[in-house]
Every structure is written in structure tokens, then in C-alpha cells.
Image (cartoon, rainbow, N blue to C red):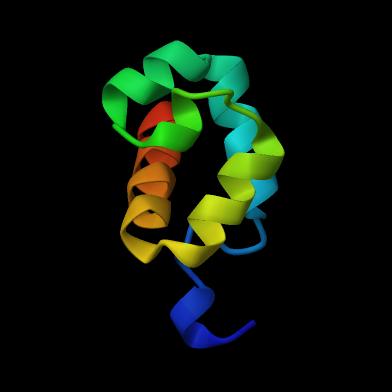
Length: 72
């Protein structure tokens, strides 16, 4: 394991797993309230959210931060 990944809590966790966890924990409506992006508001789905988040770095970082917050 590279040294820079040693303390990374996101290492080995897929974006799909993160989204599935957040949907189970918060639901789409509360996720939209916390992170205002259309893929959580208009016809939300894991597939459409993955497509958007893989292309949009700032949104992915917010989702990852919400995931880490939900774990604590």
C-alpha cells in the first residue's frame, strides 16, 4: 500500500458504494438539501449521479465529504 494511501479513509471505497451508503443513510431528498445538485433532485438515480459525479470534481468532493461525515 502506498504511503499516501495509508490514512485515506476513502481508499478502496468506490463512488457507487459511497452513493449507496448515502442514499440508505440520508435518502435523496436530504442529500439534495445538503448538496444542491440536480442529479439528487430531478429523477435521482445511482446511475445518473455516478455519471455526473465522475465528470464533476467539485461535486464528487462534496459527496465524499458528506460520506466521511456520515461515518463519524
